[in-house]
Amino acid sequence: MLACGILPMAFVASCVLFFYLASSAITLYNKYLLSYAGVPFPLTMLLFHQAGVYGFARAFSTITKREWPQFSSYSVYAKQVLPVGLAMSIDLGATNAAYLFVTVSFGQLVKTQVAAWIVGLSFALGLVKPSFLVAASCALVVCGIAVSAWADTTFSFLGFVLLCVASLAAAIKLLLFQVLYQKTLKDAHPVQLMGVIAPSVFVFLFVPAMAMELPTILALSLESLATALALVSLGVCFAFMLILSEILLIGKTNAITAQIAGSFKIVVVTAAAVVIFRDPLNARVAVGMTIAFLGALLYSYTRIRDKQRAEAARVAASGYAQLDGSDPLLDGPLGAPLPVAAGSGASSGSDDFLVDVELDILGARSDPDADAQAMLLAPAPPPRLTSAATPPPIDGSSSSEVSISL
Image (tube, rainbow, N blue to C red; front, side, top):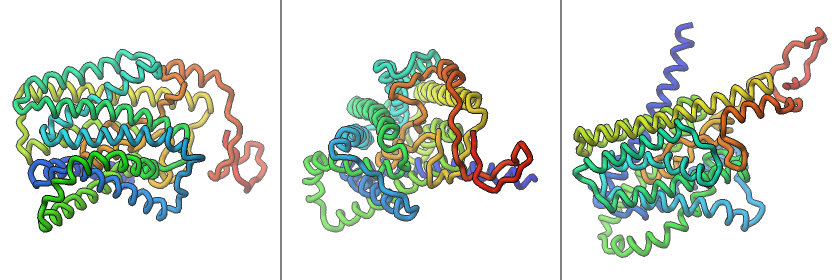
């Protein structure tokens, strides 16, 4: 009995540890390439990473025998995928460029404002109702960033502006991604979604990369070019590790574990950067980081609380908890946060919060109490055929056919 309880806990811990190692590795390795290894080509690096993400997604679909997502027309693709690709390319390009001027710890700190941008845009567009806890979490994040920026002795205004632009683009990307997932590609696996978006990101980054970095690349010697190519290719391997770690974390644990792990990642990466790159960390910067981290943690708490309320309302309305028996690693669990951060994490080393796609921004309310009341007043769902084991009939009669779950 003891072993039965220890083994699942050990597996969850190993998934979280793998996520921390992968996210820290890609972040620190990209910073090493840009600032120390003589490979100051942030946009060209992203081209390699996006090509790798697309190849990984295609291989995943082939191995798991999943059909590649299709669009009804080119206009649908242009309207729903290209805006996501544009926002993601701005996020990745600005973030990678910022790491030429700022430290890893400061970059990770400033990127926590993505949550504040998401909440602000959602409020402005009327997608969600104001919440005191959410507003307080965003205020803490902004205050923490301000304190750290004021106290950071290596502060770069250009790097800070690039990170702010990247954060705004990341928030827009996540909202657009959510629309794409809920409206068009709801049956696709998250890995396939990243593969669908990767070509558009590649196209948007190609022209600025060639215009700004190609002359410098051509000036390199063959030996230096071969070395740079090998180093960037190794970064693509780290990107694959991050994608796999997010799939395992989300698919094999639960949404709460993934949300908390995503919040604590900033602490892990910052500590690693201080040890490896000797990032300056005085008392005032530490205070600012602590304030921002508490804001991020409060934001995660509000998301978990709202998720639990919505789940309780569903169970109360339907009379049972939904269990579909699918393999989360291959099918993607319903209600779990999608690894949409893998685009920025895998490519720029600064993945955002794992975003929960359960928030319906296509017109549904986000007030948990109102949602719970609506669910309780809604009619019961129709019978659904499942492949689950058939429960014993109430009237005592025998049955060996498929069951009907209400």
